[in-house]
Amino acid sequence: MDMHIKVASEPPFATQAVPLARPKGRNLRWVIVAIITLLTLANYLDRGNLSVAAPLIMQDLHISNTMMGVILSAFVWPYAIMNLPTGWAVDKFGAKALMAVAAGAWSIVAILTGFARSVQAFIYLRVALGITEAPLFPSGIKATDAWFPDHEKAMASSIYLSASQFGLAVAPPLSTVLMVAYGWPAMFVIMGAIGLLGLLGWLVIYREPENHPWLKSEELDYIRRGQMHAAKQAEAIEAPSKGSWVSLFAYKTTWIMMIGGFCLQYVLWFYISWLPTYLQKAQGITISRVGLVAAIPYIAGGIAVMIGGRLSDVLVRRGSHPLVARRILLAASAVLTGLAMFGTALCSTPTMAVVMLTAGMFAYSLSSANYWTLAAEAVQTKRMVASLAGIQNFGGFLGGGCAPILTGLVVDHFGGFVSALVLAGCLALFSAVMYGLALRKQIPV
Image (tube, rainbow, N blue to C red):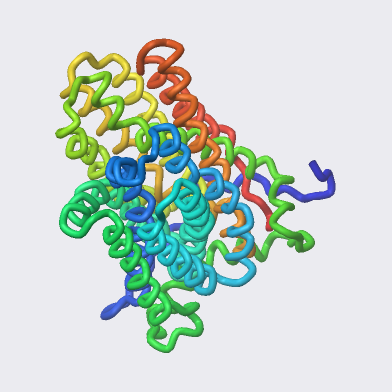
């Protein structure tokens, strides 16, 4: 660690509440959120549709199970790695430019997937999808940080983050309907086009608040006054010399957020990669029912995302420091997630297993809005919000990349899912320790 870097002391556990009256009439900031929500839904539909189409693709193109596994995993690692430079790029070039480039690129990649006819083509396209989809959330959190007062940020983020859960729930039935009607190649083309619609909305609507011709002065004043206490706090701190996003790694807070993200995202990717198999093999649910049953936890998760964001915003309104409010909700949701994983390990009936898994996804999703909003609260200036968000999510997707592999190894070694569920629960509890106890200081950049 650089001993000359001045680290800020821990923020107070209470600050003056922000008693601001919401502007009347049209509120453009929520239109911005609606566009990001559409882009997020398109993003997650494009992530999830290949797993639904896999059986037909394997049959039509004579692809083995092993090679399809390689294709399915090709998305995760490039996505994880690209979170590092894309966070920096969003801070450098702005949310509008990076979101536009990313949405256009991932939509084209999704459309081209419908024309793939070899293992190599599918692998290249999934790698490209991982690279091009990485700027979504760093751009979203950067835009939210600019467009919302502190006491609305988590709620605003939770709206488009909930689209990720609903996207995972909707992808299987929607993909199936499109494949039955038009075939799997056309399904990829149609879903890819949804992203282009979101891109069009983004290009037309998004500007920085100060430069937006449609933004009323009352709403701009509401936004900026809601950020005043954070701005004043930043001005009171001696600013360090400007450096690249690499300098964020000199701070303990960054590493705590990466470790916490690793553990949280491990749990999510346990669900994404192994939930159908667990329901089928461990609980005896038939293949014909697994698709519908597996959607239940994600639907509950989509609801919980918005609840979690709302709860931490309420704490901010009541005077809690934004950093404290976000990490309290993160820690609490991680504890509940861990307990649900342990409960699932003890389940002996399919009904109870589904109930506990749904409770686990609900608890996990309470953290989602706060996970992303935390990056805006953990830095004392706004210069590296997206960079820190990208670094945290890099750590998160390392966990996401390990979850499918470690779960398979544990299941094979111990002959069942009990140990795999206990491992996921332990990691969730460790995440609670990171966010709830270890994370104490803001980063003075």
